[in-house]
Image 1 (tube, rainbow, N blue to C red):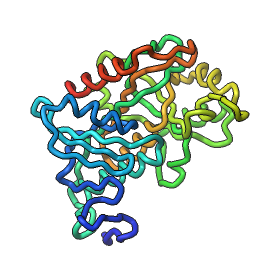
Image 2: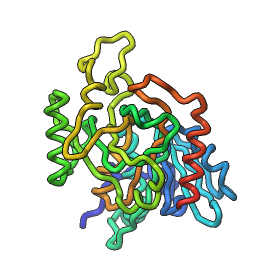
Image 3: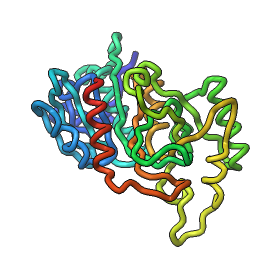
Amino acid sequence: MPKISETDLILNPDGSVYHLNLKPEHISENIITVGDPSRVHRISSFFDKVEFEMNRREFITHTGTYKGKRITVISTGMGTDNVEVLLTELDALVNVDLKTREVKEEKTSLNIIRVGTSGSIQEDIKVGSHLASEYAIGLDTLMMFYHFENDKLEDELAGKIQEEIGFPFKPYVVQGSSELLKKFGEGMVVGNTITAPGFYAPQGRTVRNTIKFPDLIDKLILFHHKGFWLTNFEMETAGYYALSKMMGHEMISLNAILANRTRHTFSKNPNRVIDALIKKVLDRI
């Protein structure tokens, strides 16, 4: 297998990967990811000790131990473009020999748990609940640039969503880790998460600009195919699921539901909802 070029995988002068500024020894095989950089410290404050910290752009990393378990928590900022950078460089840290620039024969599979916030679109999913994403529906274009193929059910769902919503493009649909869903999803709502390429128009919000799909929320709420319903909106999960599947990592997205788009309600104590999810995840790793 040819060596990976210096422009395909850029390294810093100290040998760390370009955007994350991390070396292989800086990360655990159990990684919690968050969108909001301030949430990294919120999670690591529960650690028994923090052994390593790195601040680079929106990618803030803390690695430490919680009840004897070594854990890394890292922020991504918003969007699947940042998720692509994160996962590609994390994968390189464990599956590429950074000195020889060759892919390792024996691969390492990371356990990646997204702890995020989300708004539900179904009336019966209450603000303050926790939701585990079984499937994600990508409304972004990231997978257009990869050889990614949906399985038969995923492709069927993608086609139905395109048809019923009236999108001029076909979304991608991808299942998360069934292993991690069993481990972390107990007692949570299990849902199917829509990953949008923005916060406003792509999620049916309007402020001053005219939006192209004013009835988007209503159509997504009513979408139903063979027992498959859509449950919530956010901006990263589909990218996580598709890239993790391609790279051979286990990935699950867990969401603190802070808003209900149908009831037009927002959590009065979002930090309490988020902290409860963080503690639940740490105790289940």
